[in-house]
Image 1 (cartoon, rainbow, N blue to C red):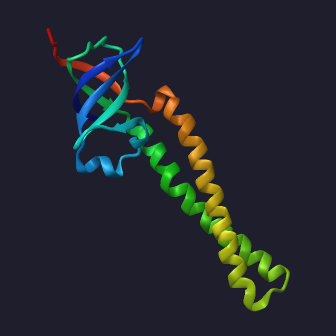
Image 2: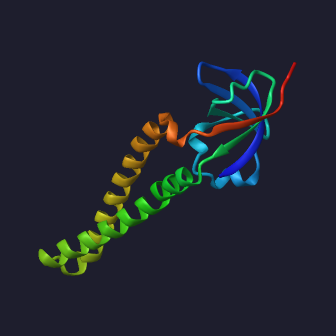
Amino acid sequence: MAEEKGIVIETGEDFAIIKARRDKACEGCSQKSSCRPGEGDDMLIEADNPVNARVGDEVVFAVSTSASLKAGALLYLFPLASFIVGVLVGDRLGSTFGFGAERDAASAVFGLVFLAAAFLVVRITTRSASRARSYRPTIIRVVHHCP
């Protein structure tokens, strides 16, 4: 689990909004969808709040490694695999229907169509996954209570 620190700026029934410092690791993070831009180098993160942190508390929150791996596979491997499958399908159909020199064009078109379909699937899946609790960061402890 990757752990980060932040300050709770808002709480709800079972969640908290945390203001945390954005670092270089954020750019490649698969959990970016649960973060919202803040001001400057800060970001706002919605996290589960099982420790009942209050506004102003400094907290440590964690992102599940398995959730990061699943999201990474969905965002990177699935589109790549879809593109390759599309190219192979286009090549097979091109040779089956005797397109000859146009077989390469059929491969390219099918590859791009499969890639576009993969991005559509990723977009739909990430929208529903961002609402799923298993992908949301969790506050694991309060470092400093605000009076």
